[in-house]
Length: 457
Image (cartoon, rainbow, N blue to C red; front, top):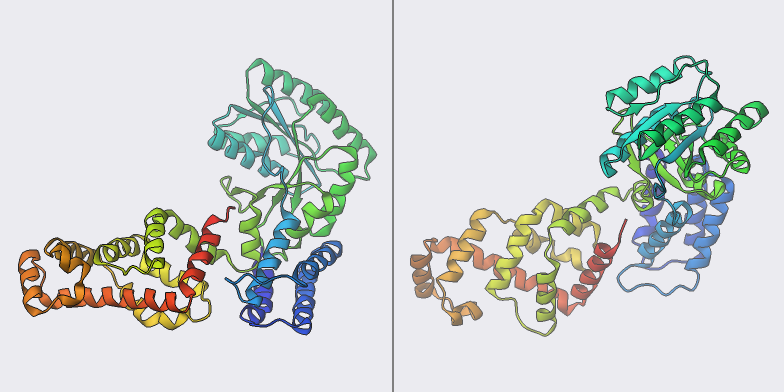
């Protein structure tokens, strides 16, 4: 759903990304474009004005972090303030109560409540291994109860069955008693779609609420309906204490403004999003992931996450300290680094380096490309070479003449020409680290990576 908005914002921010100097004029021009981008995406005008105001307030007179250009710092502020708009401290589902924990779904007609009930039941069963029963109080929509029953059976979730001619209030009473008697952990209740202007239906949902005393009341919003659902939610919230939002159909080709408006306008957290038609297509709402997608940064995050899982930060920290203290990279250090390069994958590293370019780091692309050309044989041969060297040779590689290489080749089983290739890669790695230290880019890149790796979703 963020494709169009992401495309527009990425285009707007691309121009400012590498600015070395930001003026009042180019900041204002960029903010005007962002304002139009958000307005076209059906973001609430109230939200847009607040967002633009916060950006101006944060950026004016702000000291620029040395790890970023002013343009990058500006984008960082855009990212931070968008997160602030959609994030909430109480965004996690609450089921910490004496069983059964009752979750009540409410909302307008046709927003996907029934499917969302099943998706949440599936999610909670899989994640928390809870005993769950679902039921429906929707006696108005033809086959509403049957639909929920069929879907529940499909994922092996219990369904509380009752005659469709039973009043919704009585269904709620009996379902709650059934859940208590049969020791269910969670009872999830589907309700009929209703308009806030329909007094009869609003009184009915109030009565259901008082009977069930739900720990969660999730208002379901269709991402395709735009601001109408948000305005309705505000009215619903005056009748019932909504605890969160379940956003459906986020996989649709819509403008995406609902995501940025809902929490701010309704003052309730988005807790879950439906990401497709399948029952398993449900996701906890992670603000940083969503905003990264909107800003076109999701591929960067996936690369960082991939590297984060595989990199050995402890060993790298020792190496960084060693290089800072003017020690040289030795062959053992080189071996440890190429092992990590192989584990992470050269493609991931190349993509990552292209994302974090700062000042002159990109000038080292050619030697870096050679260093990244690592396979299992390179690691195996490097180990064998090191094991065939004397301690003095390991720490003074420059003394390796032909006769020494011939001896090492004989002991390791690695041909001399391959020893020369590995030594060339080793020297290139030394050259890169030396240049980066000299230009202070080494510290900048390490600091930048640390900032990225320390960030949490």
